[in-house]
Amino acid sequence: MVAEGFRINYEKAAVEAIGPPVTFVNVYRYPAYLSDEVLSNALAQYGKFKSTTFATVASRHNKLNGVRFVKLEMARPVPNFVTIAGDRVMCEYRGMRRVCARCGDTGYMGSACTAQYCKRCGTFGHETEGCDAECKRKVGQVMAIIE
Image (cartoon, rainbow, N blue to C red; front, side):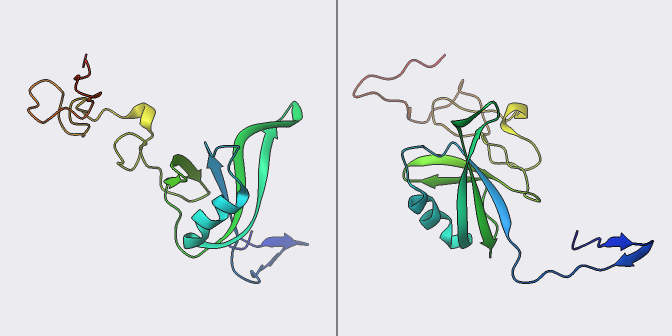
C-alpha cells in the first residue's frame, strides 16, 4: 500500500510509512520446547525483535502447528535456513529469495533439486560411485552401507 497508495473519489492519495518497516517472518520447524527468548536472541543479529505469535491449526485454535510468526524490524536479510540451539529452522518472508534446502542454489526448492549428491563424502557435484574420499557415514569402526 505504501508503494501504490490508494484512491479517494477518483483522486490518487499517497501513503507514507512512519517508522522503520516491520517484516513478518514465518519460522518453520522451530521446536515447541524452545522459548521465544531463544528465538529472539538468534534473530537479533538481523534486526530488532518486536514480538512472536504461534500459528494454530485452523479447525482447532488451541492446537499448535509448529510455525511461529515473528515481527522483526529487519536491518539485514534473514537467511532461508538458520541453526538455532542445534536445530535447523526454515525462515520465510515476503520478498525473500528462495534457496534449495539440499544444495543451497537459488531459484528452486529442495523437491525440484536435481544436483548430484555423494552419499560417501556428503557433498554435491558428483555421484557416490567412483568417489575415493573417506566415508563420512562411519558408525564406530563399521562403515555404513551405501546403496
